[in-house]
Image 1 (cartoon, helix red, strand yellow):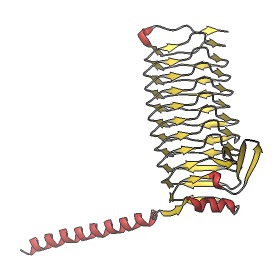
Image 2 (cartoon, rainbow, N blue to C red):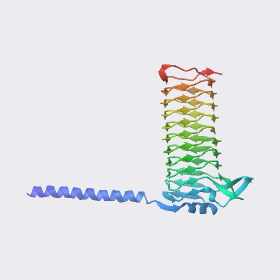
Image 3 (cartoon, rainbow, N blue to C red):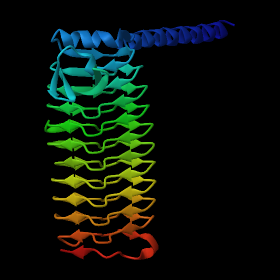
Image 4 (cartoon, one colour):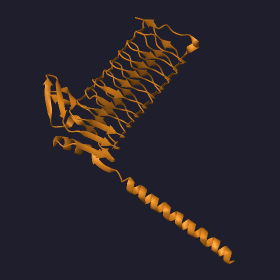
Length: 317
């Protein structure tokens, strides 16, 4: 009886000890992850109007945020205004409940005239969550701009943006809806490694120095046609479920498309490749179009798989 009582007490003490450990761990975890504070979008505009940096972490931003609402707006042409955002913009682990816009309109004599946004310092959205549409079309970024580890749940429009910064980090992004960056110009480099696009994505007419998109996943059509890559283009170990278009483009430097799987057609028609090209271990399951495509050097294709085992022609200059 005494032995049985000792065993029961030992089990009870063990349970109490485990319970105390669980409570301590939960408390420590809560201390490490403070509750997210809520702010109104207009609070951000107020900071910019005062010339103060915008620095937010672990915050919820309520309401639509339109950077064109700042006070510093100039007319640069009879039909165009520019909104100057001279503050550094830094958001980390923030949730945006409303729309986020980098463009606007101004009504003059009954006419709606566009307001182009000019970000004069670094713009960083790191590990952020955009719940609604994001539109930075026509915006100018005079320093680096980053969207690393950010999720776009609505449409993402960055058409005709100008990015002057040397290094732009957009890795590990996710886009649940359409992602459009047509006509964009990057004077520097863009890194979009480990990015996932669940619907259509278009970089049509892109002009850029170096572009790194390794481990890219696209569920919808991927369009990089009519583009100019002035440096290297690295597209290794990606997966494209729908049609991929690299047609009518110019690749001035090295091109690596290694270990990538194209489950639908890959169109390279009438493009020009001026540097070393690697297609090693890439699988063109949906076929590849190379009509009027020209290569300065014959592409390397060790272990490359083509549809129906038919190797397409790779014309030299």
